[in-house]
Length: 266
Length: 324
Figure (cartoon, chains in turn purple, yellow):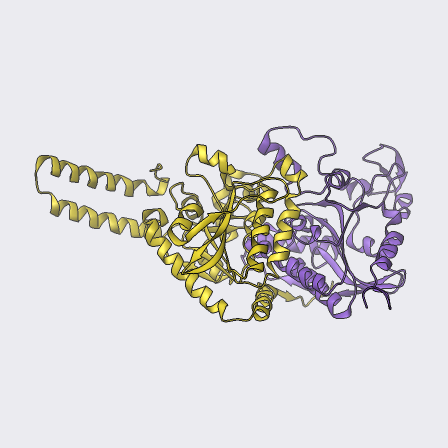
């Protein structure tokens, strides 16, 4: 994040200047409430009990099946910039002692677009959750399907959704948390299929990005269009949770989705 | 008859010449039959050559040809006792997606498809085949009914993509598409989809999670239209032909990549040269796939569909040697 280079940062929203360290301590949320984007690792660290995270499928990479011009170089650059093999981190860990399968996307990696590797990691996470009987939580941040993998990337929408169908049939909860930005094929597949759909404040969430809509309809879009609060008003989001409260509230929501011995489930 | 595409022009000129000669010979009572036969042979050679060597971009143009049979025509040619069923029961009816019940080889089936118009007026009515959320929700309602009454589901895909606009976003375009993908994975009845023209993006896939996915020979299927892929990747929509070539959008390429199951042949020059013959080929393909699927139990059907998607494209990823 460019604004965060060096010691000081000027907030995009309130224009105040803060120490980078101070912002990071507050999980990259400004005093004015502006939520900066997080890396996948920062996300995991902010949620998972210390020492409990085990990453899955860390080394999975694409073989660039279409030999798409420039794609291999782009992947390599992202890998060296982020030290990640792909645009999502998945794994297991505890949230206040509750074991979960979790995934977090990283928008630094080709806008966290979904190709075969991202899709496969999500499918495996859902299957692992099913096998273990754990809840699944996915933090989305994505520009959508990955153009450079063509129809194969489109198929990841079907694959991830089908894996969630199985999880759902087994009665296991899936929480989808939408963060800035979540658009395109990711929104139109797993991200909108949560038993609970949670969003961070003011995140951009939509099917088509606002620039393309503006070009298509040749109209200025209303203020707040496609932001979390707009989606909630239109019935697409259950809860908006500020980042500093995310972990505690997820833990409570998880506990509310646990089957109780001797309860209605038995 | 729509105007010929750029690469079809030499063929159209020749065909026009043949027609003129034929008319002339009839009017004047002169015999030009040997000249006409020679020209027709030349036309056939040219036709074979043009349509055999199409570039992906030319394929995309042919797939969008306004004279191409659309869902309405295929239903008329393939399905008996068809009743269109309208509305999503939530908001409205979307003419960009048509659905209903009918009979295929005597068996009741649910048929759903995107519809592009044949002319400007119909295109405005059909929104150029670009559905709103209510279109996908109508499709879902009809598929749920198909599952309830144990009818196979046939889907005809022909859309540039889901509509992008304020209302579509407000009413949850993304959720509507996602819900279809999610539920189609689990319906215990055979689902067969065919891309008849243009299969664009998630808006196409929302009718495309199926036990068998077929493509007409000259159809295209892509993650984004070549124009929008070019503007995303190269910041220039004018590079659509480059994007079309790079993305692998043709039936042949997608079959090679094991992303579709079957290619349905078209007459030389494209489906619009012989809609009835093309529909016959398509009906045969549906019949063959359906017969296989009907031999499976409901559990096997759903299990195999899951495995199909579970294993799709696994050959394109690997575990890296280096550590991250």
